[in-house]
Image (cartoon, helix red, strand yellow):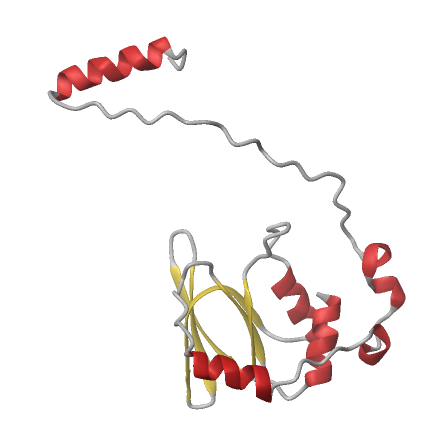
Length: 165
C-alpha cells in the first residue's frame, strides 16, 4: 500500500482511484484502506455502483443485509466489490493503441522517494510463515433417477455405505 500510494502521489492530479476490494495473495482487504490512509483520501469499499454528476461521485455499496448510498467529492478512493460488474471486452484497436501510445514507466525506490524501512520484508507488518495447498480430492457424481422415494432410499444407502452418515 505504501509503494502504491507513493506511485499515485508521483502521478498526481487524480480525481478517483479505483481498486479491487481484496488481493488474491492474502484476502485481507486492507490495501484500499491503507492507500486511502497514506493519501488522506475518503474511501468506500464494497462498491457496486458508481455515478458522476454535478462534480460529485454517487456511490452505492452492498453489505450483507443492506445497501448504503454515499456522495463523495474529488479526489477519493473506492474498492469495487468482486463480481459486482462484468467487465466489457475492449476492442483490439483500443488495446493496440494503448500498447503503442502509452509507454510503460519504470520507477525505482529512489524515484518514488521510498523509505527503505517501509518496503520489502523489513517494512512489512505481516510475514507469511507457510502457504499450504489443499490436495485435489476425487469426487463422485451419482445421479438417482426415477421415483423420488426410491431415489432418496438409494441416496441414504449410498451415504451409509460411504460412511458419510
